[in-house]
Image (cartoon, rainbow, N blue to C red):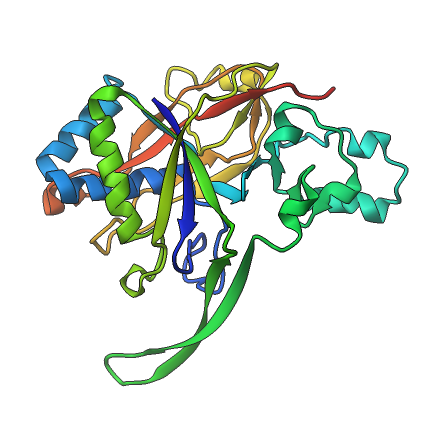
Length: 319
């Protein structure tokens, strides 16, 4: 079963993407972050032995759990990452000055009608990071990033340090959404884990209630018609497809993925992955990687995995 999971946040969100840069927060949630959060909640609900078995069958491909990254939504308008290299005819057909065309470079997200129905748009449809045919949806910014001053106190000498912490505040009718595709044999466990995750929250400062959300599940199908494939997750090709990737990829961005392992002071191995918005002319699969730090399994009794499978949607690309 495939769902569109719609998130409405009850509290601010902080998703870090740069070490110690607390004054920055991402406005999307990467697929590997969602996967890791679900797995942690699964372990809380069902125990580590059951979660280890779930990870085993997922890594071996014996059951399916596919997750996209989470992108902005406003009301019933759902945004996708802008396909790298696509301009939807705006630069080709526009007589606007170059200063206006620079607005295109700032666009990170496009709505479904623009991406899949090739709705006619102009530069007037650009609203900051968004390209949408629905001008009413973006009368107001869907979210606001606030930097709040905070003070940390050194436990040894009581010296203080001022720093800023970024909080993403969503408007009442705005939030994030992602695809979740799951086999029937594990569906109940995954949806229960999602329910717990809504109370645990995403991102930083969860002890203060940050990142908690309400969610709605909508059964859906993934677009599968078109001549190009848009990556809407982070992805690392598996060993059997690495050599073929240069022939399949059209435009891409790369992103480093790492971070501290949950409930430890150890960092997972760094991974270089294809980023959301990368475009392929043929599908790729990706993989789930073992990113356990050296000696981690011996110390903590389990391994660490990073979800790097491709979640692709087909669309009709331009010339």
